[in-house]
Length: 196
Image (cartoon, rainbow, N blue to C red; front, side, top):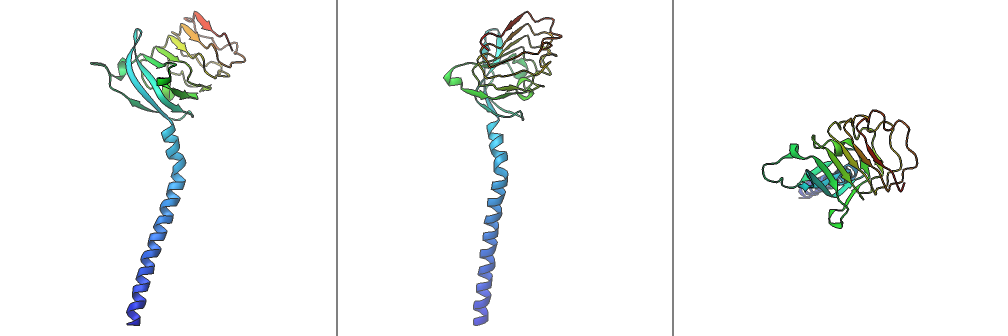
């Protein structure tokens, strides 16, 4: 009888120990993976499609982008007979209902839709534009990044934007512009830099 009780106690302890070890392992796993899960959740842009003037555009809202890593677009329904290749504008419109925080503007945002012609991102708290944000910008002819928190621009950041006609950087925190920032931009006819 004592032998049976001892075996039952040993069995109970081994099951209890396994459960404790399993709980510790799961907590450790969650602790190690949590930073990655938070970053993934933080890199999200909701996109509502509509006509924005002459462009079919992605109106970005409920955005939270804080790094230059990949961005997840949560897309709404396209208008009838239209799809991602018909999107020609990226818009953050300064309304409370379209709240967006895009601290880092990167190629993951600008190049998400392949046929972008117009970028209008205002009051989105943009602080930094990565050096490669506009690496594929042959179609872009208008960039409006007014009323953000941009402090500087990489030299040659717009070098591939040969068709860029208008650049609006009003109301940012830009202290200086490199002299060759506009090299190669033969189509550029309007640059707005007031209130910097």
